[in-house]
Amino acid sequence: MSDSAIQAQWAARLDVFQDRAATADLVSTDPAQPGFLTSLTYQAVTLPSRNATDLDLLAKALWTERLVAQGEVGVPEEAAVWIRDLSAHNPTYYQQRLAVYRREARAALAQTGHALATLHTAARDTLLRLREAGIGMVILDECHHLLGHWGRVLQEAVELFEGPIVVGLTATPPDFEAYPAADVERYQRLLGDLDYEVPVPAVVKDGFIAPYQDLAYFVRPTAAELAYVAKADAALHALVEDCCQAAPTGAAGTTARQTLVDWVCTVLATRQLPASTAKDWRTFEQRDRTFVHAARRFLLDRGLSLPQGVPPLLDLEWLDDVPALTMLIPVLDRYIRHYLRRSSDVSLQDLAQRATARLRLLGVQITETGARACASPVGRVLAYSQITGCEFCKWS
Image (tube, rainbow, N blue to C red; front, side):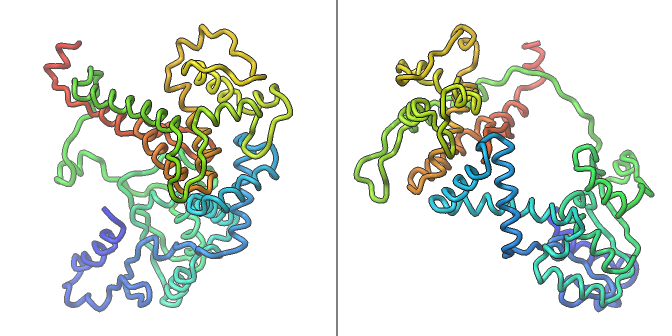
């Protein structure tokens, strides 16, 4: 259920206590006009500011710190080159990433007790109007969402309201182990210990949820599902071939593109790092051992010779047991992040987006600092196989 739907639900159900006609003037969903009962979304009182120079400086500092910590660059100066390249050549992606680090910067400020200072003026004005209205009780529905930005803001908002009664409601109590200790402590400080819990059987008995039982077993996918998986695998190899093909010549707004093969050869031959050049092969290999092995394997699998001066791969036998996807991902990942995304050519930026989307189908997300596992359509197809119980018995 959306936040706005829950907001409207609270306003509509005041008639449980009195006739709706008698209570209509007491209820408000307008942040500009608080009522006896004011029902607002969390967004209305926690909307962050979008324009703050100091916040951007902190965001870029966090960005630099992340690039260095993840080994993408060796020193902050190299990170500055990386960030400037994106800003100049791919402003859309640059703004997307900057927005991510702005959120982290706001979170960092909120952790130190400055959450209200990061809010949009509209959100701050709403909180001030609520204080002037004399808030006596704050009911936090779906309160499990308060283990983050919303909780950091509302903790300070409650202090602004000078100690109202606070009630938290949720049907899904959070797993505290999944959150930072500071957010857990704030959540517990805001809401305290659990006061009342309705057991699930009672809710089932009253008809609010259906009875259920968890059941899972391993099955062989159907022919159609296996075909879908094979199609996704074929899409990966088609992606590799797309990246290995030269861009059409003479296309408007395009520049000469390094194919995947050309780029890999250049990077290996020149020991090219994201924002500098390694002084020798040993340093280069230490900076990104995974790519160094995968890139050489990639060239050899395509029947190509290694560039002059590039050491051969040793112990090739163990590489025969490594799945092709495992060796392709580091190569595609670096090509997308270090070359395509940082290009000023819109066609290369588009290729980066298409490549990222195709890899996501296989459960691989290309983030700013590397490839990560993610949910995928292939994973969902296998998880929700359409095989019947009888077919399960046949395979078992």
